[in-house]
Length: 369
Image 1 (cartoon, rainbow, N blue to C red):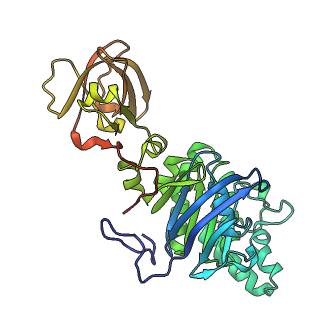
Image 2 (tube, rainbow, N blue to C red):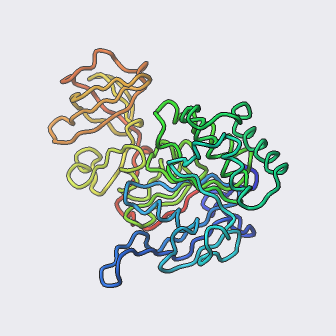
Image 3 (tube, one colour):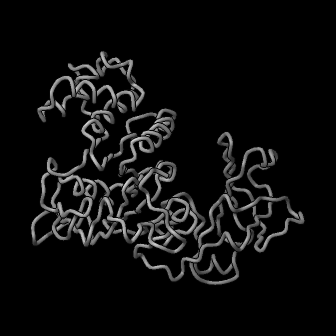
C-alpha cells in the first residue's frame, strides 16, 4: 500500500481519525437543467479519500461518476454540499487553484510538439524557467519509463506510450491529487491489462492520491485500494475491493461488481430452502457428476445448458432440475470435465459461507475495510 495510506482495523473507517482526508465530499449534490425540471446527476454524496490512496469511482454509464470527478477537479460546481482537498474548502475554487491535475480518456497531446515539450507545457505556462522545466520533465518521463522517447512526436508512439506521456504531463506539476477519467478506455484489452500494472506501479512510486473513474469492474478491482460504487447518482457502497466483491451491500452491487447468481422468492426457496434475496458468486459453485459423494452444505441436481471455454476458466450455465432456475459456475479449465456438454446431468454444490444474504440490505452506502 502506498505511503500515507491509512491502515484500518476490521469494521473501522479506513481513514485514521487523526488524519486529514486528502479528498472529502460532504452532502454533494449536482443538478443539471432548469429549476423546474432538474436532472439529478449526483445525490447527497458523502465520501472521504485518504492521502496516498489509489481510489476508484465505479459505475455504469450515466451513474454520475464523471460528474463526481469533474466536481472534485473544479470543472463543475456542485448544486449543494462541500468539497475539501487536504482539509481546505475548495467548493467554489476554479481548477487552477486546486492542487489537482486530470488525465482524460482522450490524452489531448499536442501533435506538433515533442514528448518533452508536451510534458513541459504546463510548467512553461506557469513561467517555470527552461532549465527547471527540462529537469522536471526528465524526471517525469523517467518515472513513466519514457526517458528515451523525449524527442519523438506523439504520432510516433503507441497508445500505451501516449497514455504514459499524458501521465507524465499531469505529474510534472507535482499535484497532491491526480484524477483520471477512464484513462485506459482507448486501449485494447492486452495493453489495458499491461497499463493497469504500470499505473499501479507509478502510483506506488509517486505516493500521491490517484482517483480513477471507470465502468470496468475488473479494472477497479485490480487497481484500487478502495472503491465507491455509484448508481443513478447515488453511492451504493464504499469499501476495499475484496469486501465490495465478496460482501456486496445490495442487489445492484452484487449484479454490477462481478457476476452473481441472485435468488429470491420461489427460486431461493427451491435452491436454498428459505425465502429472501441471496447472492452466490459463480466461482463458489462446484460442478460434480451425478451420484458423486461431494460433501457440501448445499447441493442441487441440474442439467448443463451452456459451456463456454475461456482459456484458463470455463463458464457453465445449468438449469436446476424441476425448476426454471438457471445457475452459473466458473471453474478452472484444468478442473473441468471435458465431457460436459449441453444436456449433461450434473450436481452443483456450494458452502453456506458462499451465500450472501441481501434480504434486508438497504441501498445506502456501506463502508467496509
